[in-house]
Length: 327
Length: 243
Image (cartoon, rainbow over all chains, first blue to last red; front, side, top):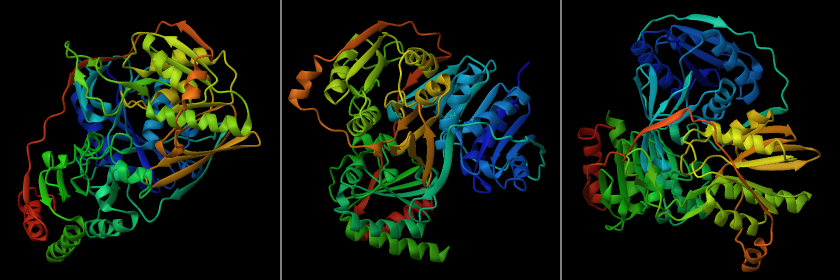
């Protein structure tokens, strides 16, 4: 008999991450294909009133572990709870978002369960009840289709690739609590320090405005921040500008930085070297602004403007302000 | 530490359609493990001790082992295997088995290999050994028998404390790797390398096919300079429908 689909629904503060809702929606789709029910696992603090929200995204049942000590991801605590939930549910498929927590936790579960994880998947299929995952490797230079032959099959889902959708509006799932007794751990998770005023991570943003070497220096990123603010986006950077010390590494898009897939990616003063390209090529729409008409970025951008970023970007900010003012 | 194709390398699909042909790629130390190795060498310089590099890979891995020894490692263990499985689990089990026989306080990994992009091995080895593991760290301070690590997460960082032995996986910001001098490259030849043949357990993950990513349809140049901006906004709204 095929087991259920279990989805780890990650929270950030007392709300579920968008990537978690994406995973729950995809979990519903798989559960329907397998003709089984979907269970979501919510771990965090202050989630009691929110847990049933997961029903709308498709969860038939929610297992909830709610405790102040679970506010931040703790590998040992989260692993213990996830293993307990897996024991209760006996799933055939386990999904998590490929966030810093999901990517940390999934392999730990796999070792304990004697199974395997397909990391950062961009597409999932089922074949004879087995999970086939499409996942980019070599920073997206190739796509691997892999079959997970052990059970439960675990997959982490790249944020912003799958759609979060209220597929069953108004659905109230059954909520079951896990009593959390803090296990012994040699790790103490101290505190979360937010980086600047940035609220959204690059991987979760729907608009990214990135700057490269063509920005000339750290002070000039202000014009990108203004544009990002008008559009409700965040600022990214190329490796060249991170290596030059203009921007923190957490802003880097590319092979040794973040892989992003926003709805709109605006590349300003970025030439489009392979190592950058692989990090952003899956954006829905790419706009390039560069003074060099021969820059490789124009070879794969959907829309390009040849021109000086210091003139074009502020003009674009004004135009966007006017646009958003109208609609 | 693992040996990977350089990030600038072109990657070709193997003739069987189920593998990756890296035969003409240049191989380097996985960049994330260069940050980890640099951290290990800095800890040794500050607190004493010894740095051992453990790697699993084919015969040719010797070349990157020599590089690691030149960069400050004292000795190396080369677990020889021609086949590296798609599933990091078997790899982690073999590594954990080998590490059981070594005494250490700090076990450093790169957060992931830039080849398979799995980001699993460090946590898996630590779980197999039953020791703490802090992943994606950008800072590591060691004093009074404990470590304080900062792990990079969405929108900021989380501080985690642990006692030893403990494992850590390196994010890019952890360190800036040094360059090896010619003298160090020569000296590396005299450092000990223990070579062992290993058999990897069965992989639970099987590659069904390898594909090239779908090509992006060619885009268009909207125009030159500021005059093109209104057209761009119109296209983004009406044609691309993203705003």
